Image (tube, rainbow over all chains, first blue to last red):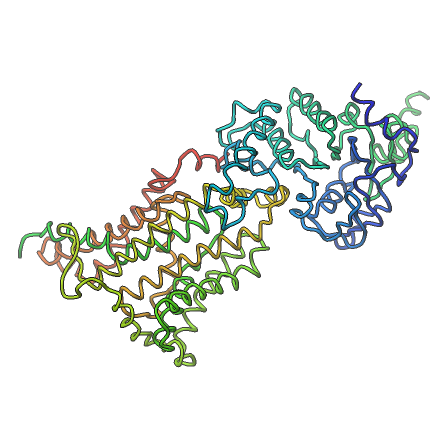
Length: 287
Length: 334
């Protein structure tokens, strides 16, 4: 079962917040970010294991997306240290992180509507010679690389079943197809770590399953995956490790089963007094 | 009372549509197309770039007596510096800020150039008028003869500037086409669509936007240089904010984001404006329109009404411009 490969890597790791991992691709220490008086993110320590799917979940307003933006360089933390592949990446800009192998997608899909699907894909490739202003004028300097990139793009489009839309403007795709395109485009850069911000948001249920399969597929291709989701049921199938955030902090982490049984997670999702007897029940019982 | 001379009207229309002004506007609009059509940069100060080119070149010859080729390099350098001045503070911000800064900066350039405190350099309001000599030395055409095809004839000196102008316009169209079909162009268009998506894919959006701003700005600078050579003068009040909006008009008429569009847009604009002006004048002169209704001077205002009306009709029936893609336009509405 493919689901075992990831969890297997974390066999002996205890299910408690901030636990160290045997081979972390990403680590975070003492990260804080506040907006005015509100402390949006306050993570003491978090390690993300290489080669597995890590789900970052939490109720609305838990700080998941802010945390995500801090990790990917789209926002600056007030304090904290982050390492990626062992290197310190504090203060690095998003494009610098992408070049190091950390690519993200967005909750609101950013398909480049007036570019064709194939151009969207080709954009994703890293280290393109023709992107230098001077070389761009001389096609022979980048033609060969362009052909390789196009082949890679066509393979990925076939894998994501978008090959029939190859020449269409990305703006003509449906919402679900755009999610697929964005994921496929991120893969063009051959990342080590892909960060998916709510990949299932706004996707119809029929497509959710196929999207989930694609996410598993990424892991099976050796890419580490972190994804944000607020719906616990969605993550059940595919996550090897679940990190739960609430009020800016990591309150629990572990395999999915240990999370659903965790009292502080249930409190975070359902409220602290969710199991207190309801008043009107007792009254009804008494009458 | 006489006959309306349609032959003269048509002749003038073509002479203007293919003339110096059309070439200058086309070059400036090609630069603007790079800014807005491809990189999505809202530059409302193209007149400032045109002024920088004209003054850079003009000052070099007029005030410092430098050779022509150094003067052209200086015109380019002025445009590059202007692009850097505008771009460094604003390109990291949202697109609207560039629009605000450019419109103000272009006016600052004009007002500084015409200020008396800079008379030693820019000659203030009187402008630069003694630089044309060295350029005319390169003119292979006889100033007293006329050149052209058929009834479209220009004097030798004007013809020289017009040839330079259209050659540069063609060259800049070629450069734009080469850049945009390349991976560089793909990144620039991606930034136009969504800057953050491009950044998330490892593209340094700031760098690409700055490059696009400089390229389009230098093209604008060349428009100023061609204009200066063609008119043998650099006048500060030529570079008013309205000039920028005529460049925009030319670009939108032709079709935003199409390489040839600025050239056709500029020819159409100058052809239309000349046609209306000459037709109006003849109608007034021949008493078809009574002077109690309108006199010749008012025709000059009416021509802008007509161009404005034509643009309004175009926006209704063909919002993508002459060459633009309706399909692409429709994607915005989704």
